[in-house]
Length: 315
Ligand SMILES: [Zn+2]
Image 1 (cartoon, helix red, strand yellow):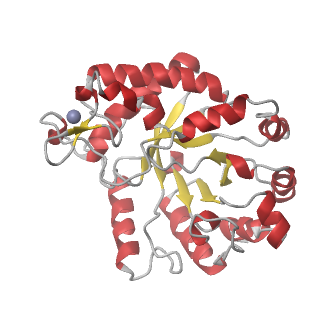
Image 2: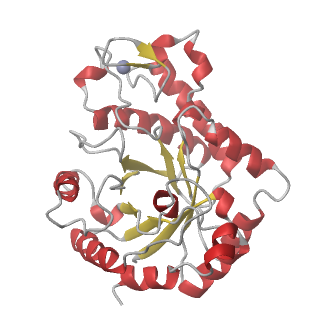
Image 3: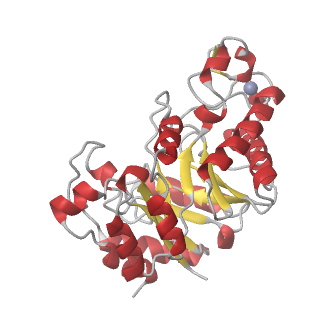
């Protein structure tokens, strides 16, 4: 089955989304938080969710048959930075040989990985996600791998697989059917040297592309991603993989500042990209649609969701 999804921000959840999902046959609305490293975005989300009515719209969407997986840069919550004082060796080593709690962790530290498994178990309990596919990502940054003597032998993807294995372990203690996203983005822009364990699926998020040109255009940023896709295809089953695109990512187009601009949906680019992704074998295609919430509906009316669904479906 082909799956057309969207990813919105938790704070943009509003009743209009229930109607948009119903009207456009969207059965997959992921919930995201913008996560500048060091701002404890997950801590903030958990406070919002635990407030009265914090799950109300999520429950209504779920009851209407719309799945609402969370897509979260969770690492700084899974390994709290204050542990650095007592356990600097749990954290990554930068290029200068210095341990730092700025991003992610040391993927060769067994105690750090065990802490991540435990914390994942708690996070999954608090999120109460009903679907089995999870997206708990590294910190939202580039260059966040570990350069310690042990990690240095591994590329960023192989380091990532060790971290994902720890997260998956924590998830499965909560949900034996849990699967976990390998987000090809940010710190991880190379390819694993071995097949990932069962239950880890690819999520391809080409943020650093030219959003005004089809991915498969001569633009060098697009070419880089096409090459990456070719390599990823040897390691991941694309039928199980997901695309996470930016065609409707109004936070990006608004420069991450509200009020949101009217989303400049480029239907032609979206259509061309979807032909490429479908030919490659992807069965799930999703776009960020952040900054499309109550303020957007008030300012700009209906966002081009019907147009997006038609473009992805190739109608
Ligand atoms: Zn390391």
